[in-house]
Amino acid sequence: LFVDADVSSGRKIPHTLFGIFFEEINHAGAGGLWAELVKNRGFEAGGPNTPSNIDPWTILGNETYLIVSTDRSSCFERNKIALKMDVLCDHGSAANACPDGGVGISNPGFWGMNIEQGKTYKVVLYVRSNGPINVSVSLTGSDAKTLVASNIVASHVSNWTKMEVLLEAKATDHYSSLQLTTTRKGAIWFDQISVMPLDTYKGHGFRNDLFSMVQDMKPAFIRFPGGCFVEGSWLRSAFRWKETIGPWQERPGHFGDVWNYWTDDGMGHLEFLQLAEDLGALPVWVFNNGISHNDEVSTPNILPFVQEILDGLEFAKGDAESTKWGSLRASLGHPEPFDLRYVAIGNEDCGKPNYLGNYLKFYVAIKQSYPDVKIISNCDATAKPLDHPADLFEYHVYDNANAFFSQSHKFDQISRSGPKVFASEYAVMGDDAGKGSLLAALGEAAFVIGLEKNSDVVEMASYAPLFTNTNHHSLGSITFDSSRMYGTPSYWMQHFFRVSNGATLLNSTLQTSSSNPIVASAISWKSSVDNKNYLRIKVVNFGSSAVALKISISGLKSIDSIGSNIVLTSNNVKDENSFDEPKKVVPFKTPLENVGENMNVVLVPYSLTAFDLSI
Ligand code: AHR
Image (cartoon, rainbow, N blue to C red; front, side):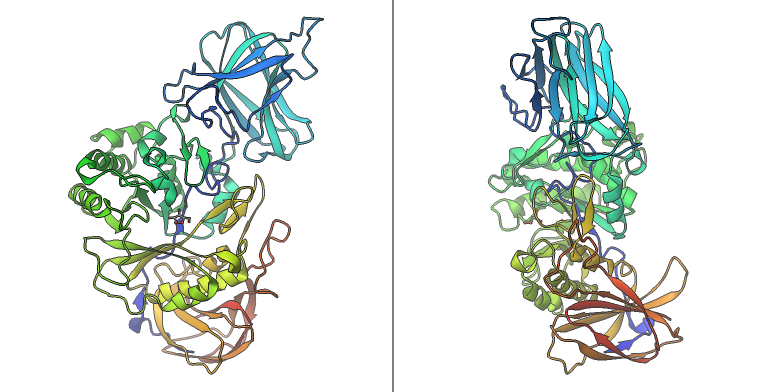
């Protein structure tokens, strides 16, 4: 491998190249990064009609003691369903005394609430009653033992009343539930019941452990909130930003019919922008362009949708004093505008009957009001030029590992004069990937090396999906449940590229007599930690045998004698990480000695290696 380390003959890699794609899929947000512990907190998930399905709430006590129903009496106009508990038993009645512990309702959260000793949880609920109430609010472990409890007592709540309780857990149980119980006869209505840990990232509502897994990737941007989630199977289920802002109690929530689950939209437009800011990443907003999987708004009728998006841009970027939506943002706690520079018009909609017509309406209106905002088209321009204006176009690829390896040359020959590439969704899928294998990560690494080498035309890239709750779907680069998490090999593969954003791509030429498929790239960068210059050579050995490789580096001004060797490999190429073995396939760092202009190294079978040299 010949590497020319002279930066003047290299090329700057865009600062934006490697980022992440957050989609509300696999309970990435609801039951994931968003720390809300109650699932179906407003009882809306069963739809707007009564009687409604209150799943996953369960009833504590049988119908001798209480009758639970739903009605449309909520004080919240956009989510009218409330839960009614007719308690028939009474603490004072010998004939029909309530069972020990009372009767009531219980919520298991998203496959169990993670309640941790010493941590405080804020319970908020809305209640009304036809008499005095005495309700026990408790967090209960999976063994039915109470971890912490408090009582809500009031003599008069005939109108909807907000109640708040802070609970400090006395013990830990990762699969707890919330229980609301009483031993007092009468009718009680509940609505909008929330349990939030106080300990979230900067108090912004993001689960700390998952947030730091993402932060460690050092993403340059975050594309959100989908994916198909943005489109919906039908437009009625699309993500519409105006329905996702303001007080959480008043958000209607919606059923994401592509991934088949309800979300309360706790993570709404503002929270996504906040997440980007907290990560130090540029927000990339994908909005619905009037097209879902099964229905479309025709171009003559698209103007209200265009206005909705202009309003959403003003919400993100508008002045806090002089603009309507900017001042709403300020009133919600964020007076400073967000640094929103990229928007995507739809998701995977190219070729649909109204895509081009609608696209042009959005494009013209956005460029008129926000000329600096870069616009991303859904149409793949790798084969032929676009027939419409765009700053970037999206490229999505899901395939097997061999196909991915071949994709390392995908962008070598494409036109350099058109819009830039945004490889916004890529992942090895199917048997090769399993639940996240080394094989998948190596195929992807080859593809990503190809992106890096073509970063004169590729401006951005992100793996998909980012997260998966293990109880839902099976593949995402970070797998988690209520309290545990691990990165798949694909997650760790992305760590090899963390220093690439803004680095210099060096010229490198690979000549090898090995029959193994191999790809390589070389970059140099100045570390912000120690201010030193580094050279990183990354090589994928996609074959089952070891390869001896000679690395010759020219154009060096200086070089330290010791570097490091970081390898992602395992005994079996199909190896995966798991909750039991979260570090089975993770990068392994060892010193690299006898570093020089000419080095003989060995690439172990099925591996991604980074050779880091201090220069
Ligand atoms: O990543 C899962 C889905 O794959 C995305 O929602 C969609 O854009 C693509 O089809």
